[in-house]
Amino acid sequence: MTTELQYTIIDENCAYSLRELCNICKVHAQFVQDLIDEGIISPQGHDPREWRFAAFEVRRIQISIRLQEDLRVNLPGTALALDLLDEIEQLRRSKLRLEQLYALNKKIDRS
Image (tube, rainbow, N blue to C red; front, side):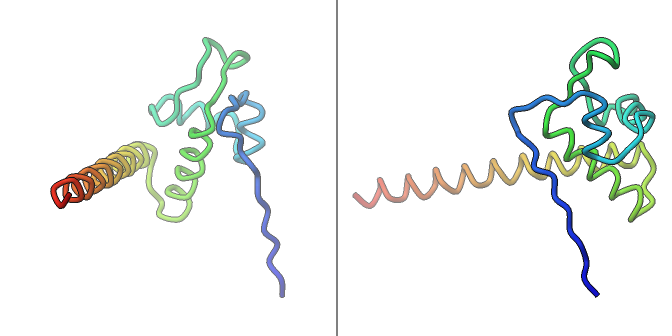
């Protein structure tokens, strides 16, 4: 038995329309609207025909789908989980910067 994997390459510099977003994420527009209402994603533009979504929002939608399907997390819980994941990522980046600065200072002190 073989499992087929499908990948979609996302250009980080592109902005996607609602239709493109729905196709990429395999979701209905109503699901996207629910995520917008909950503050999980934020389109640029004033009405659905003008909406453009950044590439990072594709990832947020994919994570939202997994949280809801795999863990049965509701929409408010999904928003909270995504906020916490974002905060963890920020803390990791800060920690890495601090470690790099510490290593640099240590190197300078030895010279």
